[in-house]
Length: 406
Image (cartoon, rainbow, N blue to C red):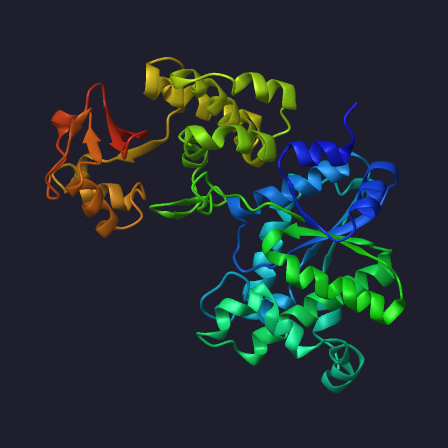
């Protein structure tokens, strides 16, 4: 039987680690407490968070105890990692609402029953710190020279790094110290872009307590050409169905590049590795079976099996005339809207995120009505477009929507 570390490695999670022998031993032979942090910068997590959520879920599946840290304190400073500009400052009320919403999303991955996992908010210990005491007790352990060499700061130095953001590494490191002292947390996991911050926490604990703790990062979710996955022409792919519809979420994975199918099946689903190998050992159109499994499994994790089945049937109906067309994403159009611009109607239904985006797609030939391309941005929708009260809109190559005349 494959060990946990071997499974994580085979699925493509493992990127960097601080102590290979000790980490493998802890993961494979012991039951450890570990943590991963999420700053509530928005009221939903995105596809970019998917990998670390699955990383954490696999660890828990093998008996390890996750601490999910929501950064109600650190988000007030802002992580400069991967950012070209300073993050927008959020009010406390907005932060609290963001935390409330993302907690529900994380619960789809992690079992918090019977103390199998805990969720903590670092605002509980960060917001009431005495600044001078914190500098003397914690800040003294950090070398500014070493911090400036960290990747998370390098790209910001040219454009300007605020002193506020410069404190982020120290605060995240302090989180690890608190969790180690309070919960005996000995390992921090996270995306590879967090490596410098994680090393800072490990070093702080060693200096303050003499204890050895560990850091382990996972690969970021990138496409085969090195771009961040989860971005579309309309923006980020969110886990919240109000921000990204369930059907659009499903279709994103159904339409993924052939080269990325095996990797995403390994990292973002619980499908056994031998089944994934078999699904992806084909060429040409046969890879569509693997894409359908991927889309179904990730949608099931986020939105539930019932919604995943609906999306699968809708997708089959629109692509190959199989399945149940009633499950396709539908938008009601009233008779009073007939005679109006199709573009305006599609924007009002949020099929297009904006009118400018709609115009661009139309002029590029990316919009069709009942399989007929629309080339006129002023095209008027009338009753002739509806057959049995329905009209089908195609956006891009593979996204379909049903307009239902009421």
